[in-house]
Length: 407
Image (tube, rainbow, N blue to C red; front, top):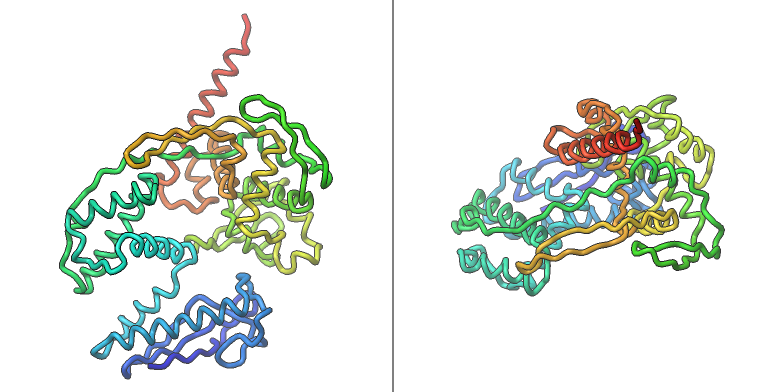
């Protein structure tokens, strides 16, 4: 078994060359790419030569080399398990496993941890009706997962079993026929209304150390000390940019200066790989102009902040802005209905920017099919929750207007 890496000759828009792999398993050879490109000046013939290097997708040299090592190890393990010559299509299928997005890998890693915690030496044959019930009970009672999370893990088991059935690794198909009941309640869609969005956009961040008096969701006064004011200002701008353009955080994170035209930005979405032109408005232009000449952003169009840090800054920002409306979410744990109430700022995340754009665009009367061209949604099913919210928002606005009339 051998895996040899080399660079393709055609460069991408960032001037980087895609890494290609020549994979030979038991005499069968296939050449494939893995979605990783590098600057040829940092390539030593088989690996990235400097660990401090980062490519246009912000992957460090160390991370790229680790992925290449993982690919080699994956095919080495697969070669050791094979007792026959594989087909080229089988090598291609094994290669696709290595192209899973980070979020997908994390999803399967979580599934693996749950499975090992449940029964370390478990086999497909274990999952008859009794075994499936035990697995569901373990997730509900011992792990304390919400029914929505239990359902996701059960779907992972179903997908994995269907794959094994197709490959002939098992004949145990009970999971494909057995239908456990899950009590799932849709989570509230968190977004900023028009007034809140404008408050956040115009909010002036106090200096570090400033003590700000606030009210909690029960009306009690407390103080919050401002910290990392500079980072909070950047987080405000990044969130508002998503709220003015519909971008996901990952696509905003990867936006480059070369993707910005006078009246448009061009985005190849990380989730769907769609190439989307998105119109700019005066507010999104203002944010881009603010950072276009800053050396600190490099070739990025906007500052780079990790998703985890951004979520924390966003919660702090929305707390400072006084977004303390109580929001109740309902879930089921171990068969029991649980209600939890949080102030709105605690439930904010980067994706709320995209949701804000969609909800406000629809409630403004923009047709869903137009909004979908900006957001990249493929069907009305994924837009329906937002359409429902927009309908309720317009009804509430009409009621407010009617109540303001006096005759």
